[in-house]
Length: 122
Image (cartoon, rainbow, N blue to C red; front, side, top):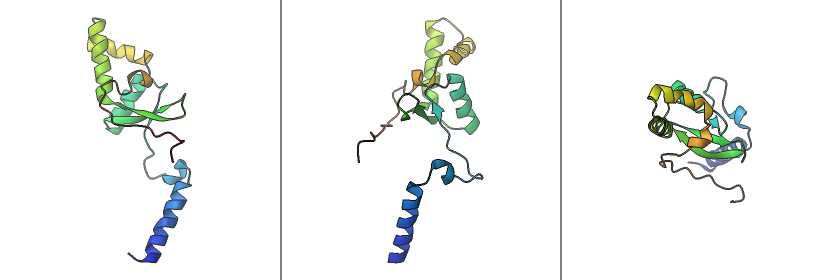
């Protein structure tokens, strides 16, 4: 590791940190996957299945930042709770998912260790 290599890495890091996210990913690379707090649970399910992932970061529209993760376990727990409390089958409970948002279920299972850092912290 030479001093010139470290300088190159430092310069690349400074450039990357000042680059808008849409310029970080090339068109060949996959863009980040996320949901908004106002998205329906159906949309969250579809994203998780489409990208074959178990959790997705949630952007809170009111706070203008990422605040939680929505995990498949949160969605499944929510569906099973609806089916039990309303005496519905799981398939009928799925129909209710369009009425609820990601904010309603974010970290419902209490398993996410994600803690957003306040902008004021440096």
